[in-house]
Image (cartoon, helix red, strand yellow):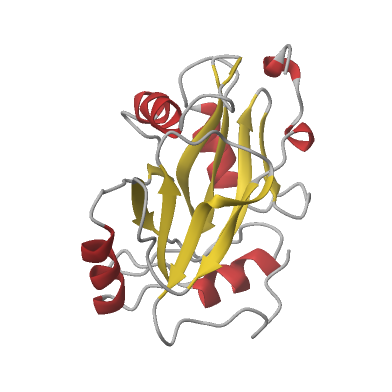
Length: 209
C-alpha cells in the first residue's frame, strides 16, 4: 500500500481468528493470552480508534487516544483489544460493556486499557507483508515505554503451559499465531483462538458497539 502514512483507519481490514478446540499439533506457533474486549485498530496520524465493525470509537475511549498521542512521532497503525482489567489484571467484559454503552467517559467510570498485539504501520511503513516476528519487534520498540492506558501483549512458544494458565485464571482462552505469517485482512487459519471450557460462548449477548 503506497503512502500508508496517509491512509485512514478505514483502509485497513482486521485479521480475524478461527475457532479451534485444541492447540495446533503441527507447525511453529506463537501463543498469547486472549483478552476479552472490543477489537479495535488504533492510528496516530491522526490519533483515532476504529472498531472491528467500522465505528469511530475515538470519543468513547478518549484515554486510549491520549495514549496514542503520547507515542513516538510518526504514522503508526496498531491492532489490539480495548479492555477493562480487574484488580488481578484479568479482562472484565461486563464492566467494559457498561463503559462502552456510555459512548464516553464520566467521572467514576472504569478506565480502559488498549492491549496492542500487532503493528500494521510503523513510521509510515506498511508492515502487513512482513512476518509476524518483524511486526512484533517493531511493536515492542514502539511500546518500550508505553503511555498510560496502553500495553504490549507478550507471547510465548509453550502453548500448553499458557493454556493451563488461562484455565487456572479463568480467562477466555489463548490465541495461536503461525510463525512467519503476514498480516492479512479477514479470517485466516494463521490465527487460531482456543477457548477454555466454560468460557462465554459466541452469541450469549450482543457484543457489537
